[in-house]
Length: 242
Ligand SMILES: [Fe+2]
Image (cartoon, rainbow, N blue to C red):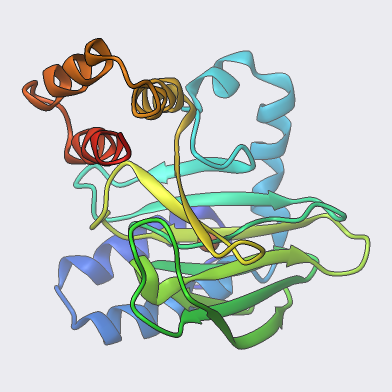
């Protein structure tokens, strides 16, 4: 049965994962399924309509790191999620990595994906060089794969003047909290959090630039609390910068 809507994709991909195939087999079969799903955008029509017409649907979307990330499905066992990304022409999207593996399928118009690799070990906040390793234009029904973390650095850009939509399937996160954005102009790495955490992280980083003891005391207080690792890491970096 051809996969021509999200429900069929979710059902068949869940069944595939349930038999616990090797990762390479899951990826090969999963990309075939994603290719079928993205060959025709008809199934995406209700999502677009709901985003515009249903306040409840809009409110059910959590605020993700990327504002153009539309959540379509999260598996109850947290093994995978499906999102659509809407890419606008004339917008420069950042070079970034992910906390999880991802499969990408082009759904509407073409999208250019450029893959990169780090040429040397990176420091916490900087890197030496990014090497462009592959550039591909994906048409509807064509797919790509990104491994997690620094193995999966890439950038997405529209082609020509068309708005593009891609469908992404992400696995479980091996790094939680943030993505890394690579700025090639000054060779820096930026950790980007979802909006709900951004102010908290900015406050921690600000404390790192205040020399008074009270600033250090707050950072130590946070370190002694039951906070996620990425928040503690931000505190440690802030203390290091003093
Ligand atoms: Fe990405």
